[in-house]
Amino acid sequence: MPTTVLIVDDEPGILTTLAGVLSDEGYATLATGSGEAAVELYRERQPDVVFLDVWLPDRDGLETLQAIRELDPTAAVIMMSGHGTASTAVKAIKMGAFDYVEKPLSYNDAVDAVSGALEYRESVCLDSSLLASLERTKTKLEAVPELEPPAPLSILRPTDAPQRTLAEGAVLYGLGLHSGRRTGMTLQPLAADSGIHFVSLPTSTYLPAHVDFVAETDYATTLSRDGQAIRTVEHLLSALRASGVTNLLIKVHGEIPVLDGSALGFCEALEGVGFVEQDRPRRELVIDRVYEVAGEGGKRLTIEPADEFSVRYEMSYPPPVGDQVCDFTLSSYEDYRREIAPARTFGFMRDLGMMSELGLGSGGRLDNFILVGEDDVVNTELRFADEFARHKVLDVIGDLYLLGYPLRGRVVARLTGHKANIALLREIAAAG
Image 1 (tube, helix red, strand yellow):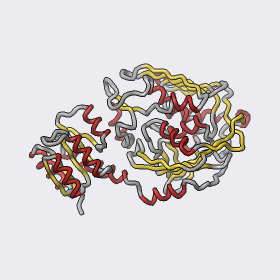
Image 2 (spheres, one colour; image 1 turned 60 degrees about the vertical axis):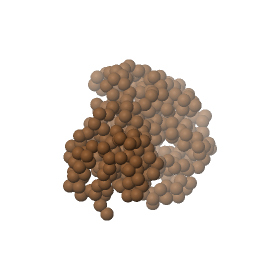
Image 3 (tube, one colour; image 1 turned 180 degrees about the vertical axis):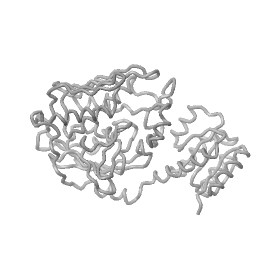
Image 4 (cartoon, helix red, strand yellow; image 1 turned 120 degrees about the horizontal axis):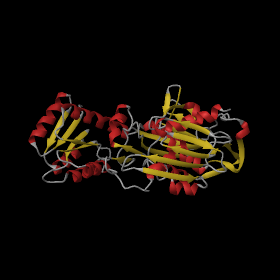
């Protein structure tokens, strides 16, 4: 059966033109000018993709979208409008539309939109064997080699706190922010002195959570080994660092789920299964001198000796972000959960084209990151006035857990990102 596209628009010219374009590409088409009829056609024919106009004479397009999504939560709906606004686009995406396009559509726009919607629909339905595998293995305790100390033993110190793992396994699902694909992962307890390890599915390739395996730092931190990669590890690692988890096996399909763009969902998942204190002391890397990474335009990242682990992040962007400073001391998990974990990742409309060219940002659904326009935040209300700086602190905490042990030191960062975080870790590791 050919792929079927339902076109819903009250302009006969749009129906004819769009149907012709899609027919030329080998798609079967259905067409109607009525929202009520569109819902019935979807119920009866189950089209693969829907082009849906925002303005319909008998039923609002957004209401029609909601009705179709109630029939099929995986429906791939592309909203269309000749005179839409950013707020309408945001509302449509939040209601579950795959995309929002402006009329008139060019030939390439139409074809690309259908292609993207089909990929989205395919990715929404995780492979059933993968789901079964995740569920089967979530409670299986596995042994992995102990991590080698990544820095001189002279600064690796035992603490009064015990090592920690989870009380049982957990499974999380969601979209990958940069791949745009549906992904899933399991969190599994590990014995003391195991460390934190990732396993790439379905190849079962082990990747220790260590700077030696960092392959990319563009917009997110990616681990890679033997041709297998796991993307966007920093938010999960941030929650693990703050909660004191030192031993864990994370099985994941390609990319860590982005959830709502913060670390809060990971904190909730960890709390949901609970923690187990282990009979070995937690060790930390005590910073014994100043390490620094500097770049162009005033970028600078340092870590220096201190009695606790703390991060100060200074940012300076054009409005609407402006100048922000977040100064946070990781003195308790509760402080982290309240002040840092809810801060979401963010992106700028001006960068979306470049991110698309790099194959990144495809999973940004307007409800899992903050989208910043020229004058204001486009898609959400901020959780904190300085949410952007707080999220940068969240990233620093996660990235700096990639030495295999928690650090003790004072971090000061200005205008830096994942690249500088990883460069700083490599400076520390090289000192040994």
